[in-house]
Image 1: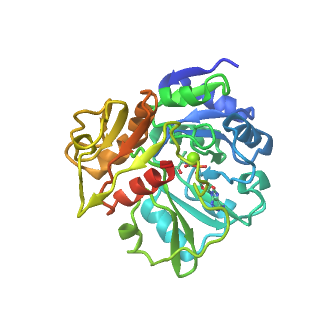
Image 2 (image 1 turned 135 degrees about the vertical axis):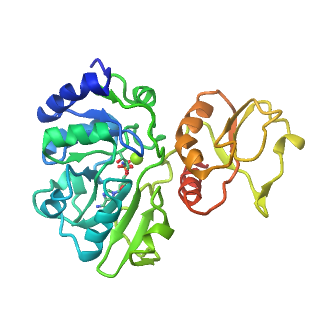
Length: 319
Ligand code: TXA
Ligand code: MG
């Protein structure tokens, strides 16, 4: 199959047409690129699993065209309605009890479904024109780094899907925060751009007790092919490994270190801004992975705000 890459303005109508016909299309969102299909068409959704090489036991996130669609697909409680009001459209995914219209393939047979509303204007145009929700996991092969540009999608899925809509680099660069929303509180299943501090304004943030599918729970998730190791910091400071070992064949993902003596360096954010670091994370990992290094050393970032999500992804990428 030939994969076309088209800019938003040029490709939006074709994207809607393909989705209508039960095909898959890679679409930009504000977090990472998604591989979308009509969420109410099981055959179309099956193509997502096929193109990604994703096991059928791993459920999909459903992206809604508008807030009203929430009650059509799930049974929202009070807290869920308040969270939707506060954070949608935006990078928050809620796990809620499903209604029957949602295909089993999308929920992997579970009684819950993950829903969110994307804030990306290009995504919004497509989902509104389609008029039906879009199921979309990140547009990478299973177990690989999430793509944050159209080129990164092409490196994962070229020849396996008909169209990639190019909406430029994703602004958050890290996948949505996933919460399971109960009547009185919520559990963070995957940290992301909406932080624990923000969520705590709406209800009790509970320690996870959830035993169903754990997002990104598989060890291979987010993994580069090159082995990755997280450096140890003491009192927030990392010793420069190049002072003690030969780092010429190693790549460095840096936060504070300059990286002299390394074969290659990717700085997450020179001004040490966690937002910029999150936006750069997957692109930087991908470039280091393609640099042909023996190992990638990653400097930890402070575990506060968005730093929680960044460290979560780094730990999952580490060997
Ligand atoms: O930012 C994002 O969330 C991106 C963009 C494209 O929207 N999507 C994304 O999807 O990261 P995906 O499939 O790569 O990650 C979603 C995670 C998966 O690990 C899946 O297991 C989990 O959410 N998940 C989906 N439905 C679930 C459910 N009903 N219960 C528990 N976990 C669920
Ligand atoms: Mg993913």
